Length: 256
Image (cartoon, rainbow, N blue to C red; front, top):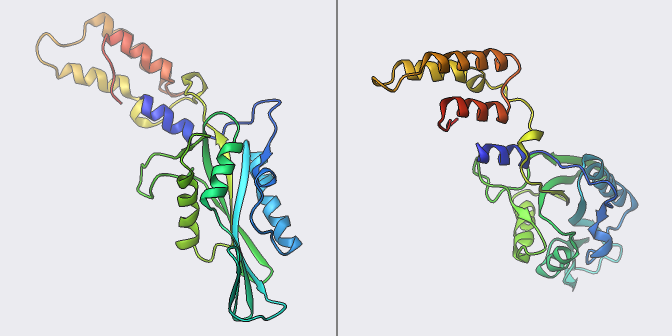
C-alpha cells in the first residue's frame, strides 16, 4: 500500500509553495548558444509558462536547431556548438556535463521530478509543442521508477536523459524540462479509492473466512462490523484510513 501511495503521488504535480519563486534556470546557467529567431524564443517561453502554471518549481531547456547559413562558408566546425554544412548552420545547445553540473548546483533544496515538453518545427515556421505526461523514468519499461533530481544527482544523469530525446526523438528541435517538487506521501491527501477491487473488499474478506479452516473463521461480532464497514464505504470508495480501520477489525494486515 505504501508503494501504491508513493506511485500515485509521484504522478501528481505539487503546487509551488506560497512565496517560492518560479526559477528559469536558463537565466542562471545560460545555454552555450542562443536561439537565432524571436519566434523560437517566444514558443520556448510559452512552454516554460505552461510549466509555471502547472505548478513546476523550475525549468530549463536544451535545443539543436538549423538555420540558413547567410555566408555559405561550406563545411566547417566554427565552434563546439556551431557547425556549417551544405548551406545550413547548426546551433547545438544540447546538454553537456559542464552545464548539467551548473544546473544541478543552481537547483533549490529538495528533490524534483522531471516532466518534458518537446518543441518541433515540422515545416519552416510550423511549430508544434508536444507534452510528455508522465515524469521521466529510468527506462521505458512499464512500471520503471521515476527519476528524482536534486543537487546531489550525478551530472551524467541529466546529460544521459537529454541525449535520448535527440538520438531517438528526431526531429526534436528543443526540449523543455519542468521540475516538480517531490513531497512525502500523506494518506490524508489521497482521494477516495473507488476501484472495484477495493469497494467490495469487505465482502471478499467475509468470503475468505467462510472458506477458512475450522477455528479460523469470523466471529459473529466481527462479521457484523465488517458488514457495516462495507455499507459505509461501498458507494463513496475507501480511503487509506478506512482500510486501516478494517485491519483493526480483523487484527491482521490487508494486502491489496
